[in-house]
Length: 322
Image 1: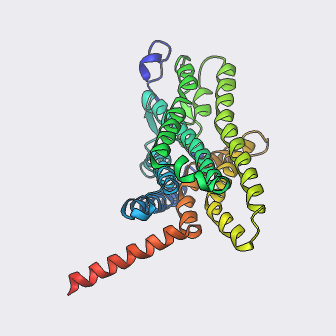
Image 2 (image 1 turned 180 degrees about the vertical axis):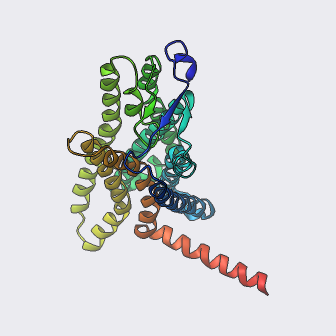
């Protein structure tokens, strides 16, 4: 990536400053412990979901295939930024080379965009399951879901290409201190020695499209779902229908609420820079940590699979001891 900008920049690396008000050793250690704990919980929870779905043939269905893709994305998103953040906190190693910085930005934006599209496909899956139950097995096959996931990945990874290409054409002649915990697009572009108004407009337009178009489709899907469920005569039938959507709704709410709060924090005066940075970082790490907990608590089949897995481990353990 750096090759586009070699003639336009005198900067070979950026300094990722982190939290301006938390630069002392004690604060850095607290941040390290806080984020490594979240990261470990995130990896454990999402890998557990992936292993359970892989081992239990009863979960080899479109809905759980989508959940496994979401779990994989939730491993990737924090893995793009958190390891480098941790080295910054504990080793005070804040430099990152020019190309690596933009590469981090690309994967952070691309994987985040992919997750937004996957949540849209998950809403479509629930819509078909509840509004067209008789045709669900023919419409939502595993093969069809795999194709939809591939399109989500392609669309998501294409989303940041234009903004990043435009950013790489900018001259960077100093300063090189990124006022963030990772190579956030806006924080990096602000360092360019040129007018970045067009870059800001393009990036905001694409970001809003990636967030709002899937959200609009999700809202439409759930309006149709609620309308269909309310026509169900029995209370038990309504509860069963809503229970199949509960986990997905919780995941959607967390994903979009956190994203909206970050957006608001950047546009309301009075917030300190550290508060804005913390909001952006929590957007990166909070949903991936919480999602597997939601699916374990709200999805009966995953709880049953987890119980069977523990039982098999217990039996295997007794066999080894005997």
